[in-house]
Image: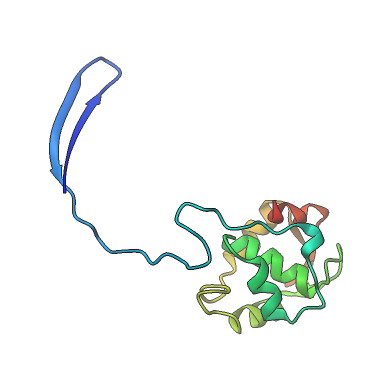
Length: 141
């Protein structure tokens, strides 16, 4: 496919040219949604910590970044209770049991916990122990 591009800079100079574009790969379209449709966001009222862990994560993780997935898993393990302590090694173990593409999409990265802490969603009471902060619910918006 050919494309013609015309660009003007801040000084008023105009640049133009033609380029040949090639399709790299076809991306599969999920049968659950049409292209361009955003994933449905979870509402706080929808959180059900009585669900099995994998089902809970699968039903809420759609479209979340790694740090948000970290907070979601911590929220499940802490039963949504702000201040309830959960050890990082336990979070990592649970994460690594759910590495399929539809759940956590890869092995645990400690960067996720650092970013979650920087965003104010979690805090540490002591080394290797995490708790939810009241603002953790922002991940669901």
